[in-house]
Length: 512
Image 1: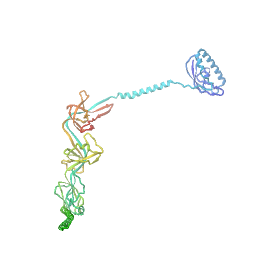
Image 2: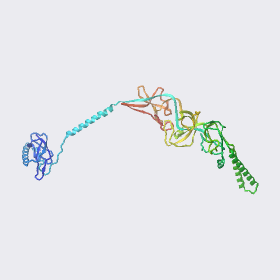
Image 3: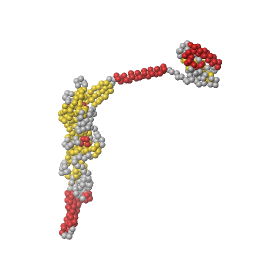
Image 4: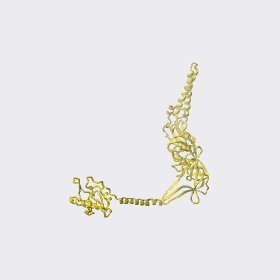
């Protein structure tokens, strides 16, 4: 019977070349081969001729063993080796190659091999992977996926393309009135001037500003509707009369000087020309002073609404406008981006939605500014497009047709201008159409078996809501507008196509 003896560390006495004896835990003393005791207590092998089976035997160190005991054990080991060598010469050669425990240098330690631990770890890892696969992957694979179509019908109706922008309601014309001056147009659908209009045109500035106009009566009130020719206020014209007399005297003096110089033959021609210029200037001043002196009343220049009254009886009128009157139809002024402006032109129909009143008023495009007003953040949007940033904007004025009395200048409004329309045509939802101008357009049509097949179609007017169909479909077709995929209660919806290259190029996105 062969045994593998696992020795505990034994003391090593280098001076005497002897190893302290050890006492095995699981073997009889006569079975220990002392030739194979390791000074470091590393396991060695001993074979008995009975059999070749290996067993592990723990051996503890006997610190106080007698040297005689070691000699006795060594002798028994030598006898056993002789019997073993006689029975097996190969074993004798193998044994002779092994080092003795009494050599100065101990043998290299041998690692214990435990393959069963590695097999156990690999088995546990494999079991874990199988459990993970069964617990996670299999349920995910087993989940059912259901895909359904969202559909729309082919209908007949109107397709209308629009451009939209926000703006302000203004009066089409605003007049500024003040004493001694003709009415000024403060703003209109085509022009805009400052709020400080001049006194009678051509009047000398310093002299005009020095005139006092004590207010005598004020008839107009803010918000009052007036008719053309209505007297709104009156003032004392005494200062204007004095200015008129002064202008008349200056004119007479200039005329006399010219007459005298012309009568003298020695007068240079340059002097004559200077005299003539002074007469012309004096004549103009006199004419304007006369006109100013006659304008001691403020009269409505047209039918309209009084929007400002800046005077009081008994107080000198201000140098600015005493009364302001808006006349004509109200207009909505909105800034449209450069991408929309080429689609607009005067005369196009429009709808003005007044935010404060929640009311819509019809209108017509009156004018489009030829030059951009400013770079804006992009408040307008055309069909299928969103707001843009940092783009050039153009002012567009839309005249309101028969607005209600509750609509006032200064209110915020949304201006929608119709840029194209098709009446009573075949149409489909915009999300049902896909394709490009170069490759053509298709619509997926639901078949009798529930499947969807692509059908080539022709398109006309395109908007964010509908697309006009010119051929390829019939009125009883059902078209696909999107898909819905459901997996164990989770729903994913896909909708929205693009029809690029419509209306002058560029992609026109659809879907909401």
